[in-house]
Amino acid sequence: MSKVEHILRYKQERKYPRGPSKRLYNMKEAAFYLGRTVDALREMIWAGKLPYFRDGKRMLLDVRDMDDFIERSKDRFRI
Image (cartoon, rainbow, N blue to C red; front, side):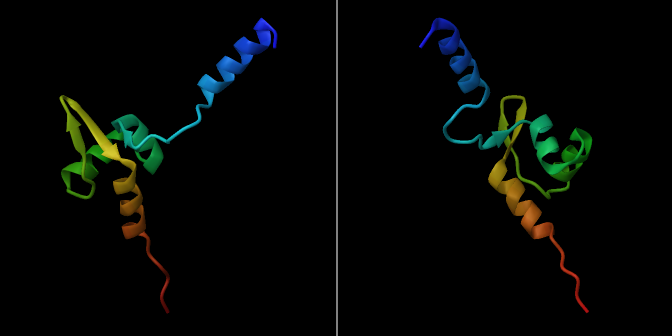
């Protein structure tokens, strides 16, 4: 493998890492995950709809809690 091929492979692996996916999301990432704005996400947290984890000043959300929120919020059409 040439040096150029090695560098390209390294860049590709850094861009798309293999391994466990991320569990904790910061506010901006969580808002994107849920399709909301950061302000709307903060209001959901303050209303008690979503639990959060505080690390110093940072607020982090667990992807499992967000998935549970999505499942709980689903509604089905009933006749």
